[in-house]
Image 1 (cartoon, rainbow, N blue to C red):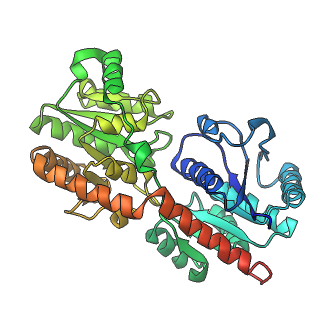
Image 2 (cartoon, rainbow, N blue to C red):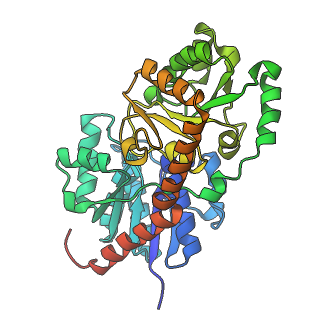
Length: 383
């Protein structure tokens, strides 16, 4: 009996949480062997393309869009529908705003009913964009959300609860634990020498492509922490066009010499192997990959109480939650952990076990396969 064919439609291969989750899920599904796994994209650019190592990149289909409102959109929609029919795809799974819209409509055009969309954040860029995405959700059999907070956001805006399935992000504990501390030391020296060394490294892992990650909150807190814990240093791991702005802001706060901006030079597991605390300062999130990575690395977490943060971090047990943009409270919690190593270590141990139990790649994979099975079993029914 032929295996069902699932198509994952991914926006691009740029570094980002949604992209990593989509690519790693597809890869794990391929390795599992229960489905024939296909990938298509809207843009083939980005460093994460190298993680798609089971498909020849020159045959990986790209349906490049310039707008949702031009002839090219219709042309690409027809090409995608033809691809779905020609390859006998049994189910499509989309992963973000653009792929939800393009994928749901192209699958409908191809007559494919098992359609799974995704929503990973508690915000939309505009009312018009959410209206467009909501039309796509009407075509979806199921909508995978990565936090109950995302579900509450959608239900409040009229998306039927029966379509929603909560599946938390998955991270491989072995990959997170594979950090090389000596490599990071080499980067530290290359970046600036002795002045950056310290006893404690407080780390934020977040892209610098928009201010939603609120790196300035992290830096304001870092200044306060440095006055109470002089040996503390601060790692900002992430790439993006705002990096120079944040470097300048750290200079204005007179803490530039205490900060290490790693960009893409250091693998995240290596950064975490060298860190003492993991921090999230976002204004808005769905479910943060960074939080899971911190926990799997055995780090205590201090995070803003947004999105699904409270579904991962038990306040006062595996870390601390603070209000969005409250840099003073963030600083106080960081100081508390830096001055109490036993408590920080206990937080890290509890968090790691919780992450292994609840946020592993295998747990995520099993849940996704169950969604696919349900969709395939009811493929002849109306949505």
